[in-house]
Amino acid sequence: MSKILVTGNPNYEGLCKGIYEAYNHNRVEFIGRWNDWDLGDFEKVANYAKDFDVFVNSQYGPDGEQVDILNAVYDKFERGHIINISSTTSFWGDGYSPEGYLENKTALDKRSKELCKNVCWGNSKIRMSNIAFGQLNSKTQKLKDDKHKISLQQAGQLVKWVIDSPTYTNVHYIALDPIQTDL
Image (tube, rainbow, N blue to C red; front, top):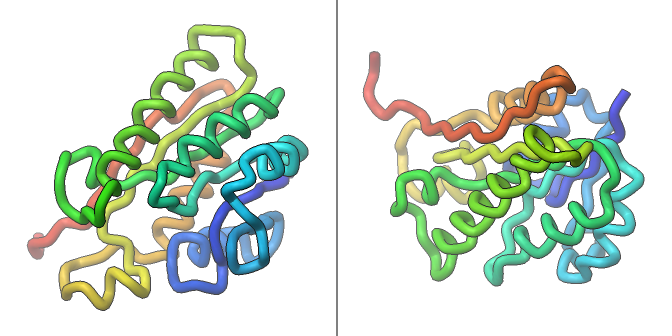
């Protein structure tokens, strides 16, 4: 049974809450500002994460912290699975964009893609996945508009599916948005 570490707050109405529920409130530990973790202390985060089987790099940082955390954790991990949470903003090249958001998520996608090669075609024992969500039904997104949203439970189940995927494969990249028309 995998030990899973996630950056972010499971008490906030966002993706981490969906992940927490997907695992029935167990097997997952969360770190972030909400429980006094300084995610800007990349070395401390990486040293803690190395004892887990799965690291979910979820909490956004406006100064590119997700890429820095990814690099630090990757350097400390010997084997396991790192899952980066991105945004379809980088897939589309526009959309939700507070200053630096598009650039930071695009840099995360690029770095994740570079590291994916190491497990499939190199000698790394670290699986690397990148999931880009658009329009999650989070507290902040609900307030923005009345567009269709991806439920937090569905998003959490997708992250769980990637974690539980066969270890002889690597799920490189998934990007998904909710359809805005009725089918």
